[in-house]
Length: 210
Image 1 (cartoon, rainbow, N blue to C red):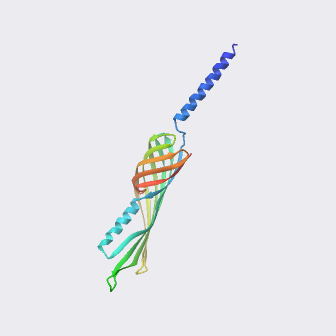
Image 2: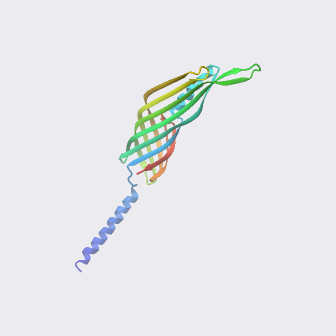
Image 3: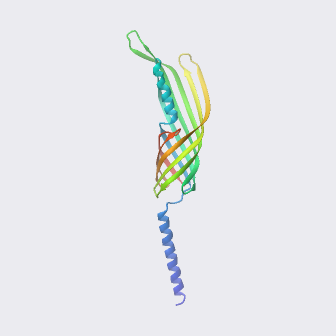
């Protein structure tokens, strides 16, 4: 009789402790410290500057245009150091090929174009990044971020008319401001970001957290 009461109290205590821990786990999202994001970017600074540079050819009998365009392809890794803060790094690759056509008219007055010059530009970025989480739930996260670091520019220019080739290699510091980001999913899901800088106006991709 004397042992039954302590045993019942112990059983009820364990039961209520289990219920309390389970409710807390449901209220707070699972803690995942490592986040890997892979995305594709549109309208980056690299693309915008190339298109603006090509637009100035209207002053000359030349038509310049961007042909194939790849990227930027963006890979970001970050680690949660605080419920509100993620710190990590971002790397991207961009390939832009621009062709300049020489315009002329034949005897009949028709406009003809011949390729006069070809440019192949590659951009590589590597920069630390910081993300701030505004709100978080089980399946979603709203955040902003900023990145600042190294940009490596490699360009090859080939003149079709003279068969000459020029090479250029430059490095500098640029950044990216991520105004808003939305992440949907638990361990694996998708994300969408909007901002301005070397990582473009809009970025969409997949993420994996562990």
